[in-house]
Length: 276
Image 1 (spheres, rainbow, N blue to C red):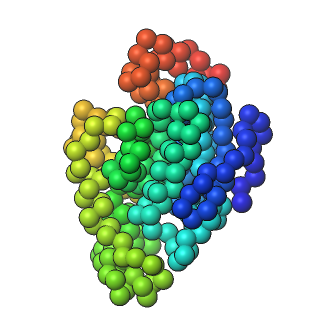
Image 2: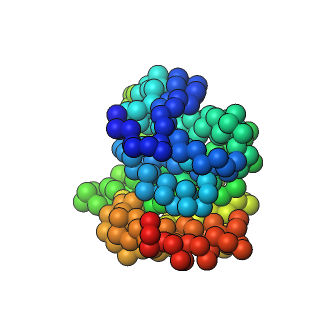
Image 3: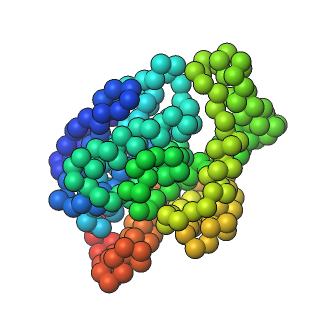
């Protein structure tokens, strides 16, 4: 379990369908919240890198855990569903925000966290609360992710596609210990091609071998009015902030300022980013 950060963070519980999930809160007295969702194989510490930017924009922050991440309660099968069930925990986080008087949310999704954010946007009864999404190295197509990882290991990329077929089969997914088949191809197609009204910022580096940059570029090209893609030149997955924290912060705050606070946030971001 991740260690609790220093104040002004406070530890709370978000009630989910699998049990109470630990989360951290930074309450700045705003009715606009940032919900930070970590990626696969990580924990709540990963998205802490975005909290300073959210705070500078005047947002409260909720840094969540979700089923089977080693921090939140486990589901019955104790397996990752690659966002197919985890999105319900983000929906419960939206309910928590609503219960605290929050009316609007910006979701910061890192890798699998971006998948969860998109699934919530498309499926949740509370989706209207999400006014924007910041995606960091987003896993928008799990088939492409699995193919890329197979290739990186020196295996034929088709093995990644075969895994997708296995996960979608009722019999084979059960052999893998997964309680329900995962319709990855259908979900990938929906995320990449579904009509989009919500503004999205994608932060992604071209050298990400784990989650292909090309998928982000294609998504941005498909939705030019709603999606802004900021490219980074660094190595590794979700390492954009590590390589250039000031550039990362400016990208987020300029995007937010243009969309939500056009008269104040942009100039403030440009003059104060160096102090963060």
